[in-house]
Length: 461
Image (cartoon, rainbow, N blue to C red):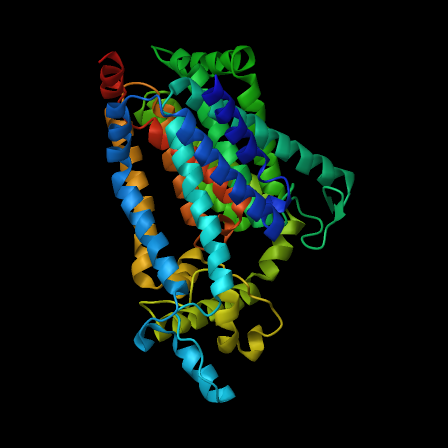
């Protein structure tokens, strides 16, 4: 009973995380991190009655990712540690000491406070994944997480659409200070909300076919298959299907090209995975893929003046972005192994800014991989990338080996592709409200990617 209550508290916390500006304010991400820490303690206390064999099996499966993640955590702590050999310190410390004529503390991070704050958020993301994986070993809880997120994503989309079409330039009860005329829901940045809406769309599509997929199998003509699809949607899957329509509309109105294209790629991956899992017939899957491509291009074209106006600024924006990437790569080369300190991009990038970039704040690199490489150094960045490769490997294995509930592994694949692709051109995974949402879905998919036969044996023993 207590464990169920802790599960609902945890899920409610994550679903509410996007509400206060994506939890991208010091007070909100601090509160979120503290609450996740409390949830970890509560889950540990309520899970003490679990069989030792089951706990060891969970830890064994988690071990590769846990070792990589722990290695990154240890490295971030080292970046803040004083008293390291001078060879470890960033060269900017010595330049600063030469300018002011006073010796400085030779540490790796250029701003240990910023690194400590970023570490707190990183620990919280890992905590969400761990909790989601622990709770979602129970198939009923995993199904509840999926349905709850689909509903939550629709509520955020409906809110964004109401604000957009009413002409209110507001986020909650505050006047918008950026992205006027574009849908952002409760987030500040349209690209971040586009990623969140994309995750909602992916999960809604998966849930729709999970409910009706078996009805489409059999010897059916294309006309019969289409009729069966709509009959099944109206009778059994109307809620997730409505969510598909609502979140897709909200996604388009964000006018985020990166979010739109990343979601299209993820949707194609999802359709392929669902077809492989036989949750929908291959012919139907191929047809949906083709229709999705042409439908997406058609919808993108229908944006008319909006797209034209955005494309007019593309060459300038692309030129500035290219200059930014070149400068970030130059900054990485100054200390490629040790980095500048996790969470210090804004401070570390100041010496590299040119007159062309002086009119922009550039507190983010708009490429999470380059930003991580600059802050953490290349070895730790590769370790984080290896975590995502490990997740994809588990999802692929689950798609191949599992006999049931493959919808979760399909969601894991598609959502990981979505956030990984969008991170090439933006920083959505650096916004806490979005990142804890992805961690929730990834933990759910990871937990359901393993066969339950061994777990059942341990329960019977």
